[in-house]
Image (tube, rainbow, N blue to C red):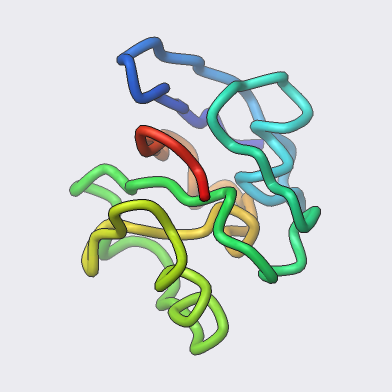
Length: 107
């Protein structure tokens, strides 16, 4: 299980325990955290689970694959370095302490 901090665009923080094996997107969905819409349900077919990864975590995460890179082109104000799709981040003990911030909106 990993403790993940989700920060809404306005600054409100939600710290939740997310079971290993779920995705960071599923952790937000299952805990009713606003700001991650996940319209495609985690199929990496949209960009509505886009977040900005805290700078301390960027290098600790697995690299983006080509499909995630393509979908991020459709995200609201993506950052080449910090943007990720939460449906592509599988939770494990290695993600304990992860901090993500939602963009102003999802598109």
